[in-house]
Image (tube, rainbow, N blue to C red; front, side):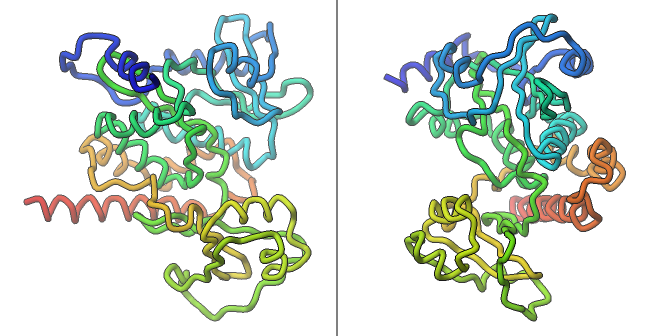
Length: 336
């Protein structure tokens, strides 16, 4: 049943091949950004309720709000930490600056006396949470479309690529992918292209063994099979917060290393990395080559003074860019 629904959405129009732009057409973005920041609010509703109203499977956080504005557009309001808010806005600014059209317009706004990220709401016609739909869309995607999404995710450190973090829309003869929930890009990570990221995790009272390694030990990690609460407490101590016990317990196997006075967890364990492609659209590579320190500081200009925005953080983005470009060059040479 779901396959027929997806196929029908995919074939909304004749399958004649036309020249198309990648990404989603969000509309006049400068105007939308201004409206998101300043327009009068006329309706506030739980995002879960709104998703159900639109016939979607609702698995969003309970504190997310659906907000309608007087101008006729709507947005999703996410109250969060300063780092997460800055990251959500930076992801949009990066997508916009590179011309990828992957992340909806996003601003910082205070609603109900809470500060949060406020992102344009996109009512898509495909629900990736329906069983099988996400995989079908990925399999039938335009190669340029899905490769650009994966490259963008990798370069900007979006390691949390769950189905609910990607909206899918069927338009004419193609699927469009919309990247939402990008708050994790502020996290400290070590990430080799083609592998899954190691993400830093720290908490008060955590004891980290001293290590002498000069370089990150990607291949010398420890493994816990079936990480139960008792095993995690025994390994990491009784001070480990419950949220980490839940997070670690969902990883099987749980791979981790100690480095630079921190614990680093390998996201998704041994599952193949989503943010990896050996196909490199020429236009995407051309735009990626434009990414430099100057453009990155422009992208993150709203976050000046944020604790995570260090020289090391900016350099890590450029390092991942270089890994993609190196892989592209190797592929180009091997294809000759």
